[in-house]
Image (cartoon, rainbow, N blue to C red; front, side, top):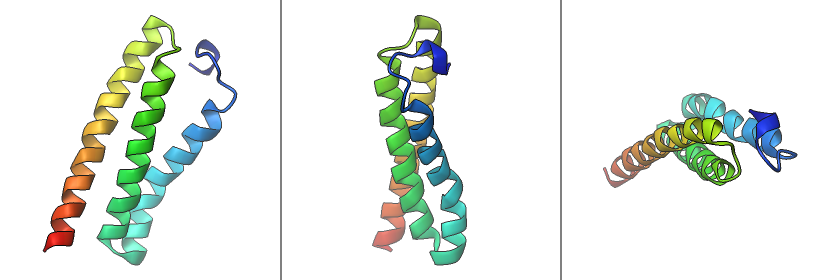
Length: 91
């Protein structure tokens, strides 16, 4: 996929940073509490959603479909994490 997207110089690095945030969230939740993990997960998923939407604009149609599916899934998960975090903060 990297070779088929325009402007790919920073794509692998940004993807690794966002992926690290998603992987770090459960460990942060264990160390600092569920709210910290949810906050990190919400930010990481939201950033990945924005990054994927921006990248899909320059992708070939075959790759664009997969990227847009990833954008929708990440967006739904980001909203679910945000709603859960807000509910936990209100109670």
